Length: 401
Image 1 (cartoon, one colour):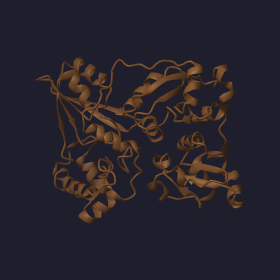
Image 2 (cartoon, one colour):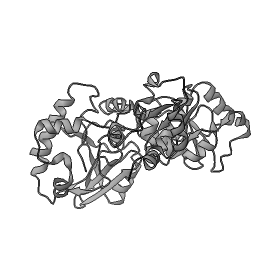
Image 3 (cartoon, helix red, strand yellow):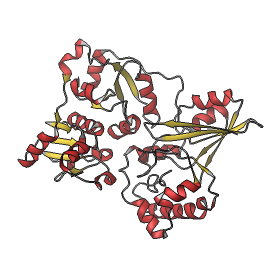
Image 4 (cartoon, one colour):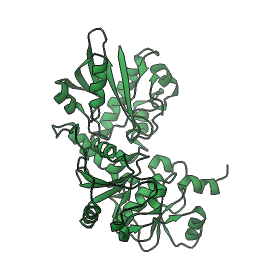
């Protein structure tokens, strides 16, 4: 048997090519939209892809089952429903059926999966960092026996206790999840495998900014802070680019990308994986941060706040502190007085951000806070900075070891 795993770090998504060397038959499990790698590997192994299996209706990305149908004529199958189990609320966000799905999950785990032999291999659809679960492991393979010992969600417990466990403390779901879940349940436009996005002139970038087009700056946090175009939002390519891009821009919204040279096309593909197909083009800026001279009047730096400076502002009641971490992260500690608004919900909860004082945004380490602070500035908020080092730096200075 041939088993190939394909893992995307920025979505924490795993997909699989499974083939029988004897018959040459193969299926792909939970494919992404850019399907060339599955097709190439199948050809290399002498396999023909006959089927596509989606283990569930995904909400965090647009599945590639229709692209594989077009390329191979494969049949499409859906399932009835590592480190944790999934969450039951994503396909039906806000729906009363969440508890019913959690109960169904309990019976699947305890009456089907845990009856399998310990040696059975477990291969996840999602890994650590995914919003599809709260304690997902970094391990990309396991066994039933290992999960039986180490996974808190599969320990002996009542159905009521299981439902409470899997429905509480989950990461905030980005708004695009409901859009992607809907796309995965319907026929939708396919991703063009030969698609590229064009380079834009400085004049075109200026015009797009003036028109209110969402400009995503995919450079690193430090380079963005040193200089960026006013109105752009920092979603670093070195982090959870696709998922976070879906948090700060609507699926289908026109997007202009600012990237390091050579990363522009990959950035557009990553956005397309969540259904954001409308990247209009790109402008590249090297690590020296030199923008075209025609855009010099639009350049600005990003203010950043140290822990010591934050302490002074908090003591003087002279700051609004916004904590954009997820609920589960805040269980380990908070900075007193912080207003909790998870990053995934920030764009839709702007009206809940207090004004009248300087705003400091913090996450755990500093990457997400750059996203949030730049988003607030792009939306017209004044005097917004992010906390250098995030909560981790604050805790190191204030929480006894």
